[in-house]
Image (cartoon, rainbow, N blue to C red; front, side):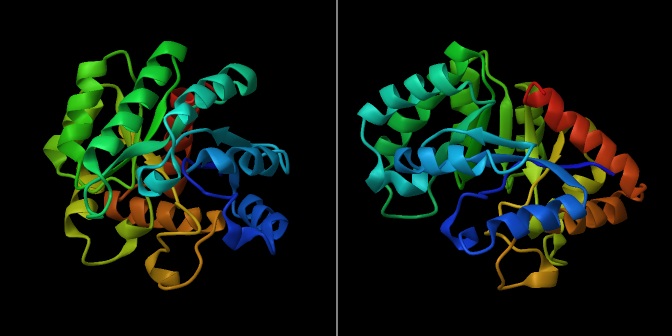
Length: 253
């Protein structure tokens, strides 16, 4: 089976000691492609270098809302220059986070909207972070128009998921889905149209239930696949084939 990790921070410092081994374990587990989204402008060069370590590693450049203190307005202009020069397959990770109280909402909106505008202009998908902000993310996607992408680590309602599908967006699900008490997520993945689903690890964060409290890594995508297959009552190879095709279609591969 070929698996596609649609969201993995392979450039994170947590992987500095064994990054090539992490990549090898992922490949051994069938993870042949990964999208590696950025979090700050300062991280873009390291991310670019990381994605040269193996085939199937694809960078996305963006400004994550949780790193707001490190962003500057000129970084949006720099992002556009990186897009023109590097030709990434997506903009991100970008979005809104209203869970963390000391992140200024208006500043978050400024950077998120700026990145949506760049994505629309360059016809690139967006990798979106939306925590306690799904309704506003949907509104901004709808208002901006001409966008496609994925809301990763989706935690919204089935109705919010449907609204995203109608706007040409997919939802990304990973480790949180594997916890038995994640009833809403587990019900959603059991019933949703499979053509709107992407699998992800968000490594090194969001470990699945089997490695609770430990560093996550892309090889664990096989555990996400297993959970989805069990919840849907479908063979793992069918889930793998469809979600990989979804990712390749979204990211233009």
